[in-house]
Length: 147
Image (cartoon, rainbow, N blue to C red; front, side, top):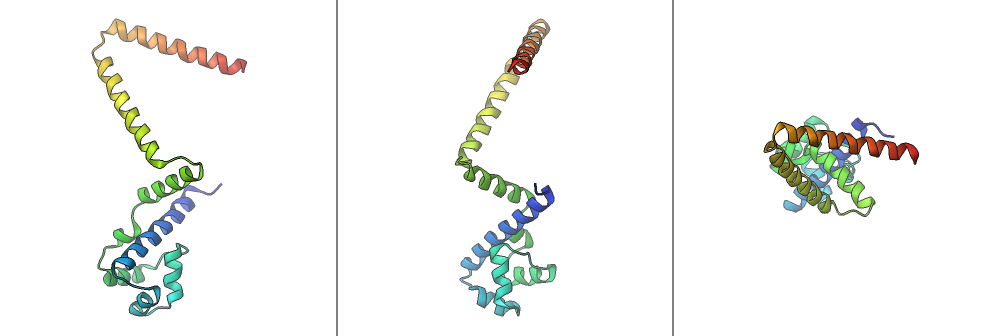
C-alpha cells in the first residue's frame, strides 16, 4: 500500500497538471510555445502536463509570471489532492461523487436534528437513552460474535 505522503504527492501532481492545462487553454498556449517562453524543452512541459513531475521552484515562479497567476492557482492544496483521489476512487467503484456529498449533507442535517432534540431532554430521559444505546451496542456485539 502506498504511503499517504506518496498518495498526496501523486495527487498534487495530477491537480497541478489539470490546473496547468486549464491555464494553458486560457492563454491559448501549446506546450511548445510555453516551453519557448520559459526557455525550456517542450518535453519538460509535457511531463508537467501529464502529472509526471512538478516544476522546480524557480521554474514555478517563471511559469506563474507567464500565466499571470500565483503558485497556489497551479498547485492547488493538499485538500484538492485528497478530494481528487477520493473522487477517482469513487468513480472506479461506480459511485457518483455527488451522491456522497448529498449523503454527507443529510447526515449533518440528521445529526443537528438529533442534537437539538437531545438538548431538550431532561436528565432522566438522557439516562434512559444512554442505557438503550448501550443495550443496542451490546446486542450488535453479541450478534457479531455468533456470526
